Image 1 (cartoon, rainbow, N blue to C red):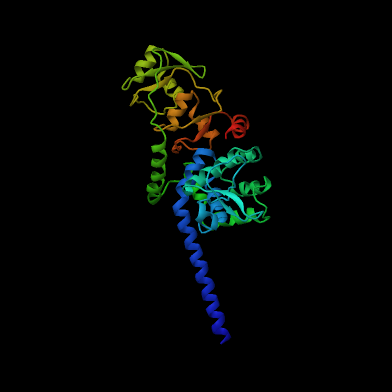
Image 2: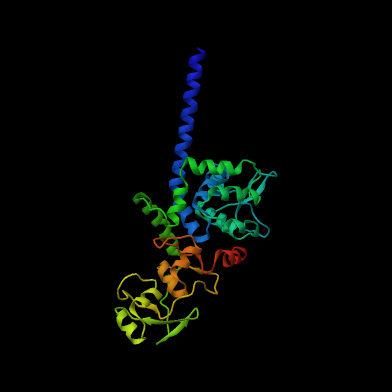
Length: 325
C-alpha cells in the first residue's frame, strides 16, 4: 500500500512539474517578442527580462499579473495618479500600478532600470553575459532574495532564454515561427509612431558631423560622383561603408570624406523605416563604430523608438543611462 501511495505521489509531482514547465514555455512564446523589442529599445537583455517576468509574475499566474497586468511588481511612485491595485508586499496593502495590458508593464520595467543611476553600470556589461546581469541586479538592490541571481540564471539556462538576446542583437537567425510574433509587436509600435518624413538637404556639398557629404538622387552613378569630386572610386565606396560597385537605389547621402567614429550626439532614436546603414549615414558615423557601440551586427533590425549610441560605451553610454527617463 505504501509503495502504491509513493508511486501516486511521484506521478502527481512529475505531472505538476510538467504542467508548470508547459505554462512557462507558453508564457515565453507569448512575451518573447516584446522582450526582444525592449532590448533593442533600451538595452535590457531579452533573456534577463523574460527570466524576471517569469519569476516575478509566476509565468503570468501571479496575483498582480492577473489583477493588474503588472508582471514585474512595479509599485506606484510618489505623484502617481493612475489606476492601481492593493497588494500585500513589504507592508500590507501597498499600491501597485495597474496596466491596461501586460506589454505596458514590460516597457515600464525597461524604463525603470534605464532611468535610475544605481542600475547604470548594468548597461556597461556585455548584454550576453546574463550571469553578470543577474548578479548585478542583486548588487544594485533590485531584489532582497539572496538567491535571486541563481533563480534568474536557472530559468535562462533551463529555457534557453539567451537565444532571444542573441536574436535581438542580430547574432542569431530568427526562426520562421518567431518572425510572425515579432512582426506583430513591430506593427503595433509602428501604428503608434508617425512615419518618418523625408528630410531636406542643401544642394551641392555640405557638412554632417564635420564631414563633407552630398545628397544624391536615385540612380546617380558613383563613377560620376567620383569623377566630379576627383575621388578614387574605391575610396568613395570606403567613405560610404559600401563593399561593391552600385548606384544608389534611392535618394541617398554620399560622403566625400571618411566619416568620423563618433558623433557629438549621445544617441539616435530610431524612426520608422530606418536601417542601421541609414542611421550611420544620417549621423555621419562609420557603420562599424555604430555596430560596435550597440553590440549589433549589420543584419540587426533596430526597433522603432530604440536609442542607438553614437559614442563609445565608456563615455556616451554612461551619459545617456543617467539622463534617459
